[in-house]
Structures are given as C-alpha cells and as structure tokens.
Image 1 (cartoon, helix red, strand yellow):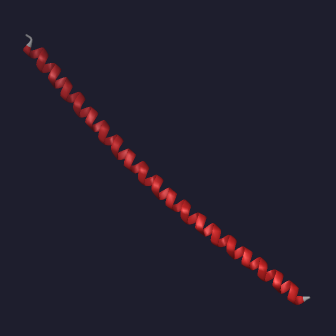
Image 2 (cartoon, rainbow, N blue to C red):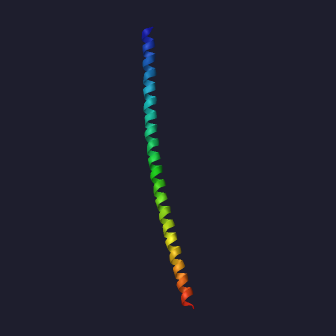
Image 3 (cartoon, helix red, strand yellow):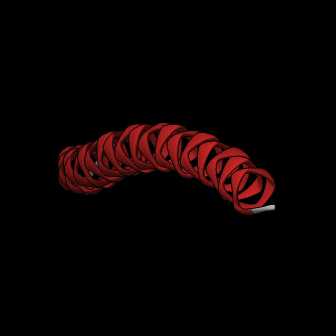
Length: 74
C-alpha cells in the first residue's frame, strides 16, 4: 500500500520537475526575445533620430539656398 503511494508521489514529482524545466526553458526563450525586441527598438529609435536630424539639416540648408537665390535675384 505505501509502496504504491510512494511510487505515485515519485511519478508526480518527476512530472513537476519536467514542468519546471519546461517553464525555465520558456522563460529563457522569452527573456531572449525581450532582449532582441529591446535592441531592435533602440536601433530604430537611433535611426529615426538620425533621420530627423538629417531632415532638419537639409531644411536649414534649403532655407539658406533659397535665401541666397532670393538675394542674388535683386
């Protein structure tokens, strides 16, 4: 009688350990995904900031050129 209960408890324990291992694997995978998403987000943010800076620079250059054209046409 006790042997059956002990065997059943051991089986349950093995199942729980397998479940824990599976959850730990999932956690590691999810942490890696979060790291990858964060790196992608930060890279896109840097690219967007550089693009906006370049746009501002070009707009300033365009305004300067327009002013020069206007001044030289008088």
